[in-house]
Image (tube, rainbow, N blue to C red):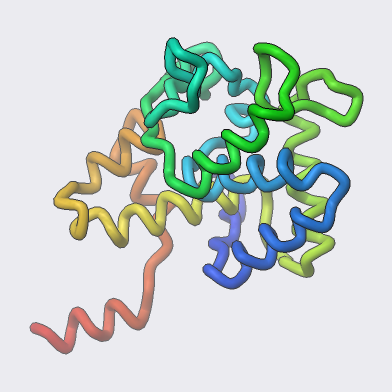
Length: 191
């Protein structure tokens, strides 16, 4: 990432954003946008390009994984991302209100939202909730950082986080991970 990195969101900031989404004209869509960023680590362009067939089973149910195709992913690095519980619920609710196939996230006029419109949408919600220094990449960076901190509890490694993020290099994944000075102090005290 060139320049300043997107700010990591605290658990409270994420809850505040989700609560704010409930007060908007399109709460189900907006909640889903936030959860795709926070719970699946998708980029704004990936959120815009995500289609129902990438999340549904052959029976039309919301599946256990997002099959992000190469055409929808940055540098054509598609990936499989397990669907987190809150995200799954949001997708189910949104699917019931959806018109047919195609993009999951639609504009007010019914067409697909563009990657730029997703970026602008995030800027508006951050401004409305008073979260300075955040961008459309904040949810993704939060997802990657939290995954890296919890991966040992799942029996995984940083390679698993890299695959979820869709990075071709582990060094790129490491640049996304925010350090925790409290954890560093606890770690040093154990030595």
